[in-house]
Image (cartoon, rainbow, N blue to C red; front, side):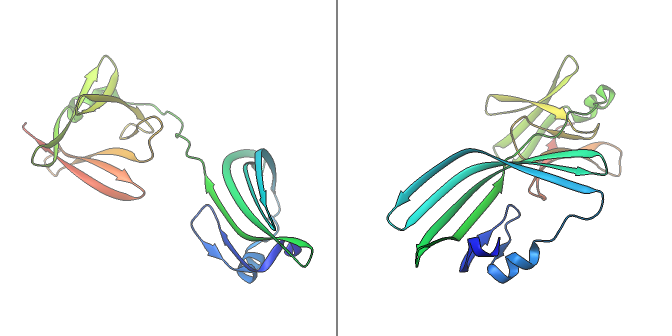
Length: 192
């Protein structure tokens, strides 16, 4: 593997870490006992311009941890450069495709606590409503279902982040928390 990466390469992984060649090589370690994995390359596309080649592809990873399978999908773009007759990667960047979490069980008895209008700033509001046994958030005429990850944590299909409801010391919901990338945007409940 070392021979495929140029000594002056830059490698950015799906976690946002950036490595030079020595750090990249040091980060590659064998899987521990009980672990195994495969990576299948799909949807490869390439462009060759002079002594530079760009390779863009999906990497579908299956990791088995003591008999349990985990799957992840990444998109990778590698830049290859031909020097002295040898092709080597001078830059590589990977990102993980977003996937919604599994839908869990909701507790419709709690929905009454969540119903109401929440304000981010004057004139910036969103409402939480219930239709049947489903919970929705509505803002500027756009309504999205809140799918349960757990009975207190929700997500919107195809949207990174989570929606949580904060209970005050009084036992009543006082805020909707829009958690994005582990940072919270707090919408305060207004009205009753």
